[in-house]
Amino acid sequence: MERSYFVYMLASQRNGTLYIGVTNDLSRRVHQHKTKQLPGFTSRYNVQMLVWYETYADVTEAITREKQLKKWERRWKLELIESVNPMWRDLYLDLNC
Image (cartoon, rainbow, N blue to C red; front, top):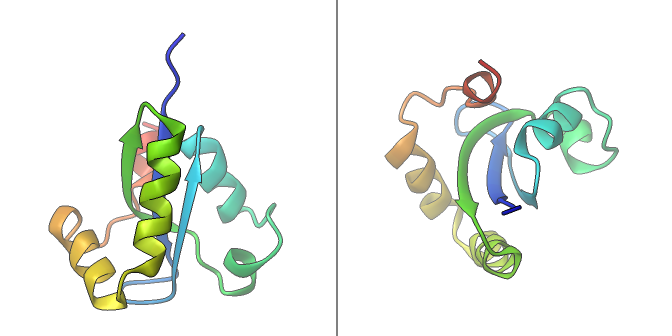
């Protein structure tokens, strides 16, 4: 059985507070953020809108990408989001249709 890993970005609102994470179950993890099951940054700052993600077959590649993005300038992150999601839609809705 082949596993997928996801690097994802959440936002509090358009151009708001950003959070970057990695998981092997994107739907479950975003649901946890939305329902504030995960104490910490995202629940404290109401960061729960899935605005960007990438899929990887290798967990090491996913973690490397997560670390890379966390070092990026904010402007680059905003440009990355807007390159695939210019309207800042909550992509979580697409995961669960």
